[in-house]
Length: 322
Image (cartoon, rainbow, N blue to C red; front, side, top):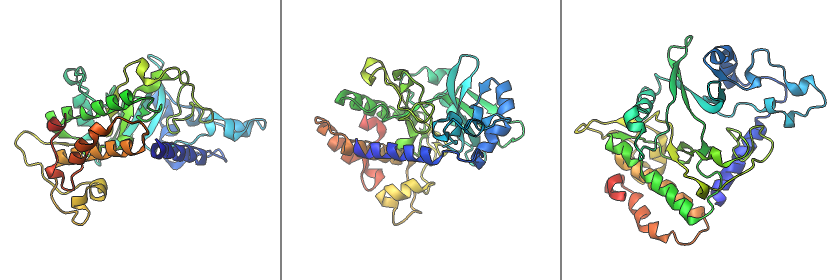
């Protein structure tokens, strides 16, 4: 999967560029440092780098290299941090959300994590463990979620693994059946629970490396050894459209304008977000099929062509796709 592996290499380069030479936190890391004590009281342990009394290990010990020091890796994703949950020793992800910018993200995430829907096998939305109000920032919350791995790590080992991934991706029709659209289905918004396949913890940013950011992870099993679930994440621009309501509106985000041919020359045209979800799903699968080397996936060609029509309104619905 050459193109996907190129993305992985780019992520590794970003991680290398994120090496902290001078022992100074990046601006996006200040929040985590300032809230480290509070989060520990809430039951979450942050990396030593975010301790208020942190002293860079490589500056305190001249025999240590900053390139081999775990606390030298700067935070790679502005609003996301992996932490240790004290109650069960499990790694989880904290995502800081501005509720004014993304007013529906919390509600939609909680809706799909409700007891009734969380039990549904066709629910491919990432679970929310908790929503934490930030005392000194009433406009923000922290979402507590399982730590996930990018869907292309580890690499697909056979056709069966690819077909199973696609089958689960199609299951986001469950969202449509609840009259909700994702509106941003793309490679970095599809994650997998493949952590159990590794002998070592992964780095949250450069996931071809272990948690130190400097060594390759050790893979214990391939995907075929156990059921791997794939999830959609990030509901910041998702939409809820009650039965019978008008759901045509101008594209709300640049991705539609960039990738959907109908909107390239006229970004003010009304679009059906349900149809755009179908287009994006087909577009992502087409990109994957363009870079995998396995033979025998040609049976998907006509389906994908139908999903990526120049005019999404002519595409099949997700029910028709499945």
